[in-house]
Image 1 (cartoon, rainbow, N blue to C red):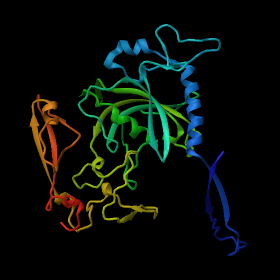
Image 2: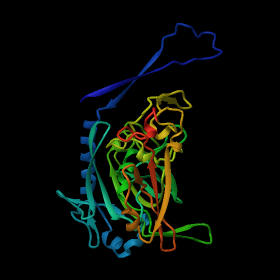
Image 3: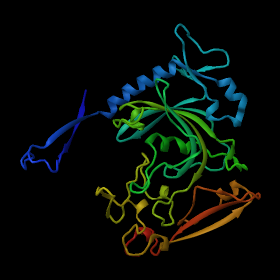
Image 4: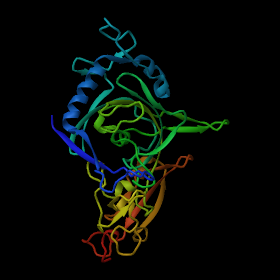
Length: 357
């Protein structure tokens, strides 16, 4: 087994103790980090065994249609001597065959090839799907492969899928891989007691290897290197612009792993702990470092049409982009937002990425 050994040097300063010497040795603590590829093989073995020994209440979920919620989902383990799911239930995996609504996905993350599973119970009836960097409103229930619940939402919960690393922090990696393939709720109603009822929401269950979860970081109820499971409902999405420069974060330079890599002016910033890291464009309101704010080097307009399709099929110039989120005006019309990137010299980068323009 290949292990990467990470050494953390901890210097204990003991104040007001006369015996403390200046030349006392530094205590070195060795923390062994598992190789991601090897751990993924172990996690997939554990996930496959779980799926082969568990079933869910498929018939009941289907009877509820688009009204099903995470509280309606039952995942149960085969009892001793039991070889198949009872009537009305479906095995998550039987031999090499996955349940009809269970899909295995592949993704690359941290230079590692990962696989994970999603039980797609309802894609959602809304007109919008979040991008990997957006904020979502959702319900969830998390549990281990031992079927022990470690966390759940009492009320709809808001979180960034990807934070800015300083004032906001995102969810574990699996969420930003999965949420863009679901849609938000079709509609919602504010009740007299202050709660909100959602109709036709995105609904599913994700089965994640540790590398797309907490990996080596143990947390309450979750040992290190634990594959985990989440039931989830996607309710709403909010388009994130982490630096407030007028360009949504998902357009500010991410690679295929949904990791931000673009830092046009190659500047740096630091967090409250003194850690220094690149000021990527999505957290930089002057992307090219020319002293002109990015928001002053773009033009934002909106337009309204009678259908979502008409909004999305709007003809655009070479330097225009239609933003992902479409607004339902609740009156039979829909509004889209277009960013026009100023381009002083055609053939050169747009002005907000060109320090000479």
